[in-house]
Image (cartoon, rainbow, N blue to C red; front, side):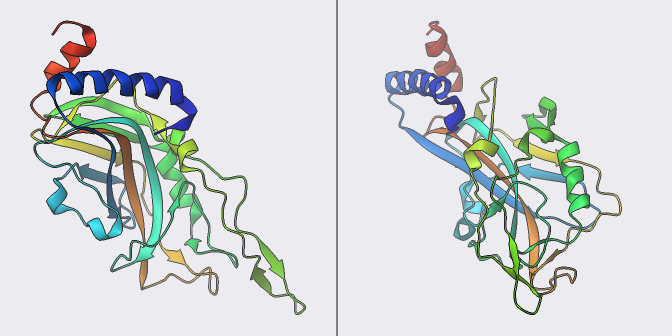
Length: 245
């Protein structure tokens, strides 16, 4: 949940819980999470909100089971630097982190800035319900960033500091409410100008040399509430909330 909007989200949760209780449906705080490799020169990434059985749970991906209903409260796009085989042990990054002596990061951070000048498209049941949601809102630079110090020989070394990440601050609330049914095709896409872009990443030991064993990934994270076996009850839930049931 987004703690910056805690009172609003508490009110949303209370309304949905009331509807779920009336319909005897189990309600849970939950998330959907998907990821894709960033490919050089490619600026369009389509994320089908796939069934749970088709996602890689070992790296933190969470899908939507066919019979369930998910109502997202907020959305986040982030980057992740992981091994090609995906370890699931890499943190999320919310800005174009450039590789340097203190941290792994992008070689060409300027190419990544283009993502934040792009937009997000949400498509449900062949209808575009949000055509140009601004990606600018997801650019969040933490107050504390990886820092370097110089040793006696003048060589740059990591100061051992980790970025002061607060993913809650980088999430953006989704209004109006979207009812994502497991029985309905839903796609969320990121679109931006990636012409001639290089999304290679590098280690602190050689911040200008691309890694061949790791890659940058684009991660989509939605958090909200999940209603078990509620895929076909979205209209009933909306009627209860509006008092027309």
